[in-house]
Each structure stands twice: as structure tokens, then as C-alpha cells.
Length: 241
Image 1 (cartoon, rainbow, N blue to C red):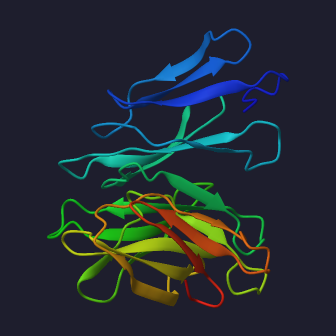
Image 2 (tube, rainbow, N blue to C red):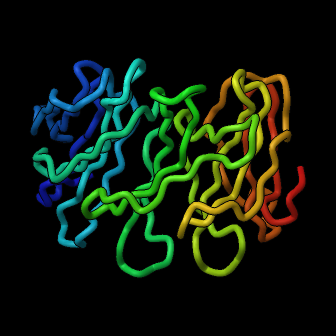
């Protein structure tokens, strides 16, 4: 991304430990700025970089991880590496952040999976924050026993599933505590409520990987595309494999 609006793109990377970030000038690899003061045990997910104000200077977002406690954070940086705001979270694992203006009102939202290592069973919530100030919009846990959202290890996908012009959230579900069964849920980006969900699409495959959403067969319906030991294509409109 061109951080300083000089026509030359920069490379922005997470710094694993101590958790932080670094920006390099794309033309010669020299350091533009570097930070090593993020909260958490590590920073290993890719950032989101987006020009919220449409002024040529993007905002940079990172979500860090803490494997053994609750002091990780979601952090917003200015184009030159200064901290705009930060809020504590528990753990995002490798999942990272998604960003969109789901209802086209000019205000963008952050969506992130948050594994609550401080709670029994370490359930995962799906959280949404206002991108401009990182105020929490809503936080939801999977409401049915025996399962949890798995968005801490996967990237939340944002797509209009219902065809109303408003984007929805597509995220994965796992059984607890082993995570050997994979399902998915479509949530409202407005309040995190479930639009539809399926808990047992595939069994016997531990852990999770980020899925893709794309109209792979060009029938007008988006498909959820997931791969581990098996390759799965799930039609999000017809709601079948």
C-alpha cells in the first residue's frame, strides 16, 4: 500500500515477537517505521490497510495473540505508524481481521474472531468494532451447546448471501472441545444474529483453515470453499454441498 501518498508503495508486515509491525519502502527496502510495543505474546496475522477517510492516507489494523492470557489487542495505526487507538482482546490466532461497510452508510466496521482463553473451554466469539475508533459494536458466542465459532483461526468472510444488497458474515463452526467437526454459519453484520447455520458438514478433520467464498460455478450463488483433508464446496444460497 502507498502509505504516505508519494506514489511509491510500502510493504507492511507483522513482527512476530515482541509483537509489533514494520513498514518498508517498496522501492529500496529501507525501513519507513517500526513498532515493537503491541500488547500480546505475538503478532502473526496479516494487517488490514484501508483509507477510511478517502484522503490518500490509509489506516492500518492489526490483531495480536496471547496464548496464555487475555492481554492481546486490536490496534489501529496511522499511515506513519502512530497508534490511533487500541482495545484489549483475548486471542485472534492466525485468523486476522476483516473490514467492510456492510450497509453502505459510510462508516466501516472491523470483524474479528476472538478466542476467550480466560473462559472455561476457551469459546470463540465473533466481534465487531467501529473501524474509526475501535468501539465495540457487538460480540456474539455460538448460542447452541457443544459447538463454537472458529473465527480465531480463520478469516471471517464478508459477502451478500441473502441477495438484499447488504453484506453478511460467513464463518466456521467447530464442535467442542476437539474441533473435529466443521460447519459454517451466516450471520447478520448488523447484530451478529444467525441467518442460517449447519454444524456437521464434515467430520473427522481436526482444526480449521480459512475458507474462500466465490461463485465457482457461475450460477449466481456464492459458494463456501473449504479444504483440509477433503475439499468441500457448499452453496450458500441453496444451502447444500
